[in-house]
Figure (cartoon, rainbow over the protein chains, first blue to last red):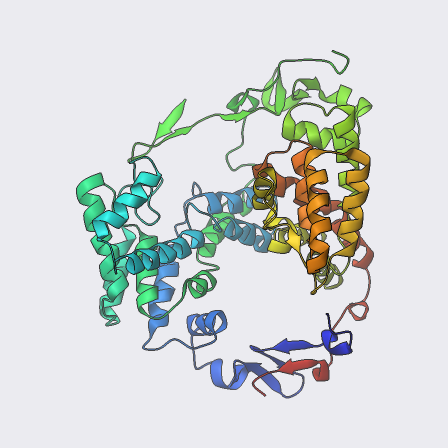
Length: 266
Length: 242
C-alpha cells in the first residue's frame, strides 16, 4: 500500500543540489569550488552520467568520440532535422535538440552504441560454451543468411574511417586493448573474411567503453548529446538563409500512391 | 529516380505518400492549388466528418464504420487528457510556468508521454493482446489496482462488446484477487486493437490523442507566476551525500 504521509512531497537526490546561499553539491563535490576551473566539461559530463569522475584521462577518448560523430553533413538524418528547423525559422535550441533526439535510433547514433555493447556482452558470454563462428552464424541465420549485425555494417558506406582516428587517440592516451576490443576485432575478422562486412565506429567505441568499466546504460547516458555538434553546424548554415531555402520540395517531388478520387457518398 | 551510395544502397529522389495528393499551381509547382486526403477532397472532409474519424482515416486510409467510429471517438475523449499528476503533464506544466517558448511545450509533454508508462509500451502490449497474452498492460499503480482504468474498461466493454475489450475484462476480473488490474496503457492498447490499428501505429496514435490535453494543461499554467508551481524548500530537498 502506498504511504499516505507527506514524504512523497520530498525530493531525494543522490546526485546533489543547490543549497541556496551555501553552494552547489554535485556528487559530493562543490561544483563551483572543486569542479569549475579544475575539471573539463567532459569529465563532469561523465561524472553526471555515471556518478564518478573518469580515471586516467579517459574523458579525452570520450571527447574525441563526440568530435568524430560531429559530421556537419545535412544529409545525415539528425542533422537534416536541425537544418529543417533552421530553414523554417525555429530557434537553435529546439532545432539542435530535436535533431539530437533523432539519434535515439536503431540505425545510428547513441542507440547503436548501446546495442553494440549489449551484443558484445552477449557474444562474450556465449564464448564460454560455443565458438565465435557458431555464435555469429546463429546471429546471421536470424536475418536469413545476410548479416545484419549491429556494429558491423553501415547504411551508406563500407568500412569506417573514424576508427583509425580514434585508435590514434587511444594510443596517445595509453589505453590498453581489453577483452571486448579484442572480441570486436575478432568478429570483424570473421565477418570481413566471410561476408564482406566490417566493424563500424559504434562497435569499436562500445568495446573500448566496456573495457574501461562502463555499463551499457552508462554508455547511453554519456553519449546523450553525441550528434549535437553536427546538428548545430547544419542549423547555423541555414539559419541565416532565406525561409524554406533548405531542400524545398516541389509537388512533383512527391508521388501519390493512395486511393483514387472518391466521394463520401460513394 | 534514385541515387546510389558507395555501398550500393539506392535512395529515392521522390517521396511516396498514400495520404495526401496535392495539385500544383500551373505557374509554380512549389505552391498547392488543391489537395485530397486518401482520395477524398480536403474540402469535402472538412465540411462533413468529425475529427476522430479524420484521425482514423489518416491511419487506416478508410473511414470507420459507425460502430468503430463511436468506439474511436470515445477513445479520443477517454485518453484526451492525462491527469495533471502524470509525469508528462507535470513536465509540460514545468515548462509552461518556467516561461519556456510556447511552441516548444508540446514537444516536451508529448515527448515525455513516450515513456514506458505512457505510449512507450503500446506496440508491445498490442502485439501481446492480439495473442491474448496479459503479461504486459496489466499490473499495479503505486502498489494498487488502477481503479479508474478498470472502471473505464468496464464501461467500454459493456457498451461495445468487442473482442479485445471483452478478453481484457475477463482477465481483469481474475486479477482482482492478486490486487492487480488493467493499466491505462493496457486499456488504450485494447481499444486500439479493437478499432483495427496496427501495433506499429499504436504509440503514434496514443501520443497524438493525449496532445490536446497536455497542451491545455500548459495553457492553464503559461501565464502563471513561478510560485504557482513547486520549488521545494531545502528541508524537503534531501541530498543523500550530506
